[in-house]
Image 1 (cartoon, rainbow over the protein chains, first blue to last red):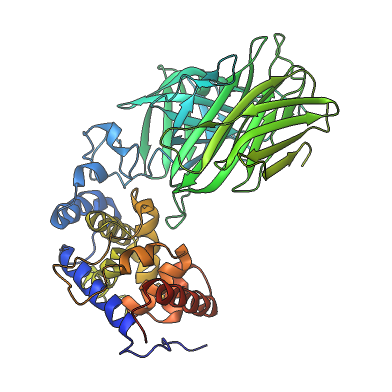
Image 2 (cartoon, chains in turn purple, blue):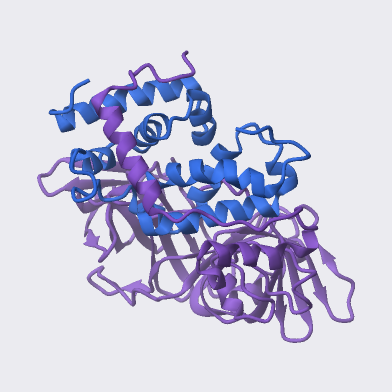
Length: 367
Length: 152
């Protein structure tokens, strides 16, 4: 394999590409840099801010001063340290970083140490629908909030949250699974509830995130972010449906990039009045096709499907339920569907069809 | 490229890397977001200087950092050559490039518009040099088909 291009330098297409690249580079301001030796790590924040200013960037959005608006580090790396700027390294962004719980500290009690860092928390932006009407049309969307999802070694939790300044407040649209997992739940797992229900203040210092609930309880998370890992891009959409009786939820998530579906996922769970769980299905669907989640007894169906599909048909034996898909404003590549059926003990299938009757995708239970 | 070692200053590093990084990202981002992406990548290099200065292909690595940290990168490549500035360049080059698959587009841009080697391009894209060659061949073929009038 040659290490240099085999296309001649005088190739007309190559020459035009280079001319265009020359022009683009010329139009983009060059970076100015600080001079002298590289500073100690403890001075990184202050000098990086100098670099940003020199570059003519919106430095405030990236490198807030220690006493700046904590909201500024929701999306970009900075710190909310309340000590001194000199001692605080840049922090990871709150959103789109996977945070692993290391310990829970309750005033006056021995800290609870997460034994295997199994509890995670991940926040991202997206478009959220809180439910569907009797005709299956989604309603209550969008909520201009962030979405929080996480899990421990057994169960998952999720919530829509409002992030304001240094506060994270969970909205009612959320919940958790309560599956029995074959062993006594770890105490750390049981401590999820304040995260999904409560209001906390957050502070990020380097790779550490601290959530404080009141004056008494502190959750300390740590992240190890890969700087080259792609940030989920495109448009995220979450679709949820609440069923009857209470506390029955399904939700699904899709990410589009232009008209391409790059990620699609669905989960359903059921929490009965006595907090027992009868079923939980969390299938991962192949990208670009269909994702659906179905609860059992009674059945809720919610999902996202490739935008070519106009109808999704649920079939189990003689039971056939057709669910029209619904376009999501501003979201390319995906349509949502939701509905209710009476029986889904197993062996159900979803078939997505286009307007011309052709099959777009199928989804089988148990896959 | 100057040798990157213990003695190399960050200033010298930026002088070497920043123009290449800016040119590479200019083909992947809207023009007004390129400074942000370059700035984020260089800030990352500054923050992790001990590690970055020892990389074999720091420009490629920082290209990935700049891309991954740009919130607007999904908007894709610039609209196209400005006919007023570049009357000799085919105006359809931008749309044709944008229509390529992402890996093909990146391979064409980094190798032919930026002059990166296959190895450098592969390192930046996380693929092998031979895969770069494959994407390049297919990408150029698509471009020639789209543009028609531009022949080798």
